[in-house]
Image 1 (cartoon, helix red, strand yellow):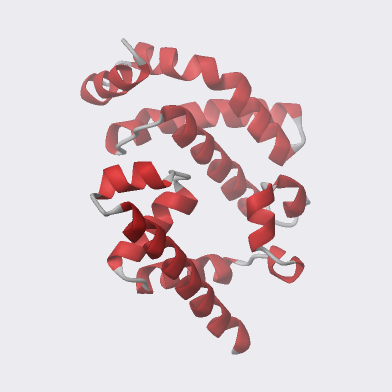
Image 2 (cartoon, rainbow, N blue to C red; image 1 turned 45 degrees about the vertical axis):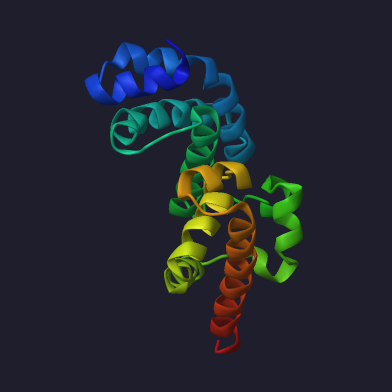
Length: 182
């Protein structure tokens, strides 16, 4: 079975051996992702195991098209959430852990995110039109390309690009409106 078939089979049966076969090839990749954030061998190894334990439930409820990409994003988000929980205990240089495209979007002033900032993003995403919200989430959070978003949503390619561009602009306006009031 290829990866897609294994995902479908696991979702139907919950067979942990199938999940193990899916997960094993990516363990070293995930260790690298975790080590980038935690900078500690033991914490990174523990995180790889914790991610697997969470996958047991997550993969049964989420629809996953590209397992490697989804797993990378899931692992990155897991690490960031763990770091948020341990706030004050560990320092992570956000600039070093961002991709070049993400760094272009973020100014130095905006690198210090608080719980309120995450809540504001969530609220601002909810304020976008449904089309913009879906396209922005798929593009930035799920890291899908225009073609994949077009296939998944059924929207025209130019509409997808427009929804992302306008959604990003509206999201920025919404976010900045909260900062001016602080």
